[in-house]
Amino acid sequence: GENVEQHPSTLSVQEGDSAVIKCTYSDSASNYFPWYKQELGKRPQLIIDIRSNVGEKKDQRIAVTLNKTAKHFSLHITETQPEDSAVYFCAAVAYSGAGSYQLTFGKGTKLSVIP
Amino acid sequence: KAGVTQTPRYLIKTRGQQVTLSCSPISGHRSVSWYQQTPGQGLQFLFEYFSETQRNKGNFPGRFSGRQFSNSRSEMNVSTLELGDSALYLCASSALAGFSYEQYFGPGTRLTVT
Image 1: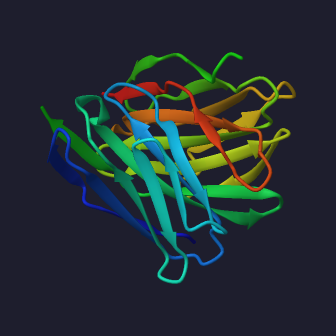
Image 2 (image 1 turned 60 degrees about the vertical axis):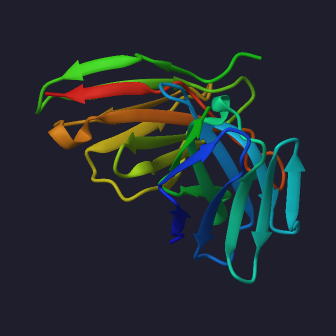
């Protein structure tokens, strides 16, 4: 099955700096890569995603890049703000048969933005 | 559109008991997935239901089971509870939007086993 590795597990940055979280996946059949943000005590929220036919996608201060050959993808947050503090999860989605898709998550990165 | 809802939000049970958790997906979504979230293991996939059929199952013991009703609402059951079952249980619904597979999470049920 799919295996997703996520690094780092914790990340502290000064407000205004950039943050980068990296993930690698094992299943070359994975074709959709979402990123979720989970604030303390809240549910995971989809913040950005990328499909395997795209190399980069941006949405205001966040961007995701995908390298299919190397099987890794990254989340970039620029001009970080205190409200960016949360746990971020990457995931890889692959078709698992019988019309079903399965998300495999990384173990998460706790991002702390220091004012 | 109302989001994914889960009940109850909190549960305290003792070892050996069983528990049933409920999830109502976003209206029109037919796929419901369940995840166990613990501090050390992150989000681990339990199973997925679509049109009342379990299509996918993660690597959990048979004590964990689920079902889905004709209105897409889903329940998961854990029998013979163990201390290690203490976790946040999240469900997520999906409309299987074409090439992507966007999942929307409920607020979770926090289960504590004593």
